[in-house]
Image 1: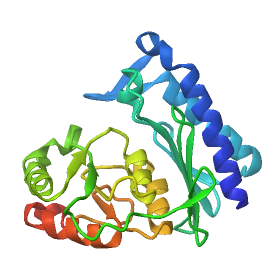
Image 2: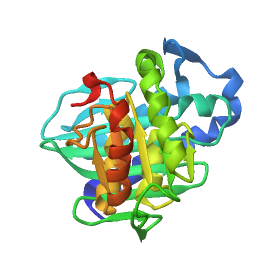
Image 3: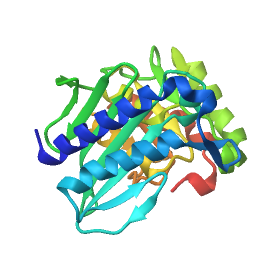
Length: 265
């Protein structure tokens, strides 16, 4: 296993164990609001601290971009971390959340881990080595278009509520063309499911780098495509479309009439 990936897996599993141990404490956890309906719990912070400590033990000079602690400068490699993607689900005992860890070397993603601690499913990728689920190679689906496809998404919220109307236009057209649309509430897992062929595509507005970094490498290493809402290169800037190659192209075409000008980059 790639040495960076080995450390990422170790950190993700340790964080996942911590999260599961605290699941039943939901109503009694210390929770604060970063903004309206955007929560952080003591478990988010503890899981992030655990991940960073494990990585620093092996790579003390590396940099970090983590959801709760922000950016920490370092050399060459940057670890992009969401210690608990799906905090609201976790706080409600809704079993759809994940640990997401990626490592970027000189601006290029090199390894990725998304760990689902409730199902003990481990999605991993290393650049040039493909994507695996629990050690077995996976690929994106062979779906040839939106007909019959299962598509994941996320609803705009917080600052992105201003895009709700155009998003609903996108949702309407995708629902009319696909077999089904799902919104489980963890973008990291949504992207991992595209990579493993469980869903055929995904789109969302207003994500953060720690939501998407690991998942995008999982998808590209599994033969899929990732881009902006208009099909341009995705640079972890939040507005994302992903899928198997033909579903990706069909999604881009379907939502195009509803993409606001300011999101067309």
